[in-house]
Amino acid sequence: MKKIIVILISIAFIFACKDNNTQNLLLQDDISISADTIWFNSSAVAAVNKVAITSSSDWRLTGIKTWCTPSAVGGKSGDSITFVAGTNNTGVDRSITYTFISGSKTSKLVVMQSQNDIIQFITNTTYNVVSAASNISVRLNTNVNLTVNIPTTNSDWITQGNNTYSSDGVQQNWLTFSIAANATYKARTGIITLKGVGIADQVITVNQVQNDAIILGQATYNVVPGGAVVTVNVQTNVKYTVTIPTAKQSWITKTSITTDPVIPGLNSFQETFTVGATTTATRVASITFAGGAASAVAKLVQLPVNPVYVTVPDLNFRSFLSTGEYVAVIDSVAGKCAVAEAGVAATSFTVSSKTIYSLVGIEAFTKLTTLNCSSNYITQLDLSQNTLITSLTATTNNLSSLILGNDNVTTLSFSSSGLRNPALVYSTALTVSSNKLTTFTCSSPQILTLDMSACPALTSLTCTSATLMTTLYLKTGQTIKTLNKLATTTIVYK
Image 1 (spheres, helix red, strand yellow):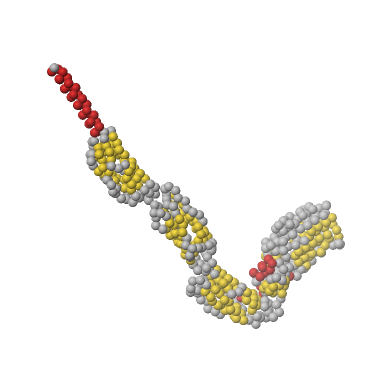
Image 2: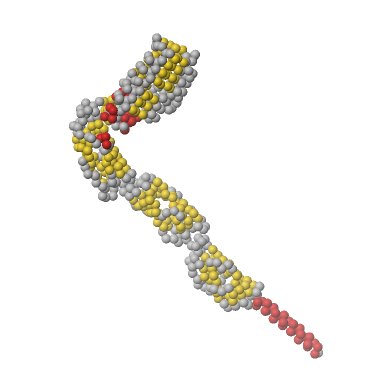
């Protein structure tokens, strides 16, 4: 009986020890925490709620401790810890997972922090632009959806070119704006406001300078032969100077005192000039008003009692003569001009590449000795009244008639491109008349007939490169010492 009792007691003891070990094992592996997630905003603040730990044994904490710091990394059951986060300057949401460990058991806590709202300008927030139309580009980094506001009052001259784009995290964005030309004659300032949730309004300032202007009452002032006081009305927003060409100061005197603008926008002034009498040629003077980025010209025209007139039908030739003050244009429709002092004295004209079709009117400039009219569209050129010309350049025109009369031009040469205009239209027939021309060369590949019968002084003629020339006209009895032509070119005497 004793033996049975001992055996039963032993079995009970074994089972009791087994139950106790199992309970101890369960207690050792048990751990729990009071929260599984903590949120921080982007600012650096401490957690409000503590995290309480319940465990069957001492616990420890693992996890990266960079931007977030726990108040403890270990402890016993019943402890509470807090977490402190730094300011989030990354522009994106961020998180850290911490693990609480007790024995073989773990419990996880996620600490999360929201992004900070960022708008960072890479380019300027203030732009100074010219008065002409232009564009500006604003480059910025942001993680916020932006809207653009441009006030319709005082800033309606600014228009948005494109929208900004946002995405997760801080991204580079471009904003472009078109700036209208400033026609107000005053400097102006406009604003562009960028708005976004979580950020203060961002203001971009655009300063546009005034449109500098000098506006004259009229462009041309006609003065009577006996002279007069000329009044020029000026509207301007700049400080300006008045310049009378030195050569004109012998008969024009400025008699007013120039003052400066005192209020924003256009100011009105009057400038006066005293013009002396003339008894000879027409006089033309261009008086320049200049200041800031603006300038204007007042042209004074004074005709004598008996002016010399010439008709200049070609608009571009007439423009050249007027701009150079060689003439005063009296009737632009009819092409009527008065020959001015500069025209009477002119000895050289260069009118190349001016899209001129006719030099009619050149006969009035009798003192010319040099003329360059190359690269135009002239077909007929009569210089018989310009008897002092010794140098002539008329290549790259599709000439059909060239009259030199008694001009002292003794040598002329037209290369393969010499008898075609800039549009590549070639001459097929050319007549030359001159009393003094001695040497002539023609290499035009498209010329068919050449008439040199009105050149009695000609001693040398070469046209061997004019491969299509069929007929050469000469005067009966005309003797040319050196005559070079193709066998296919027939000489016809007049």
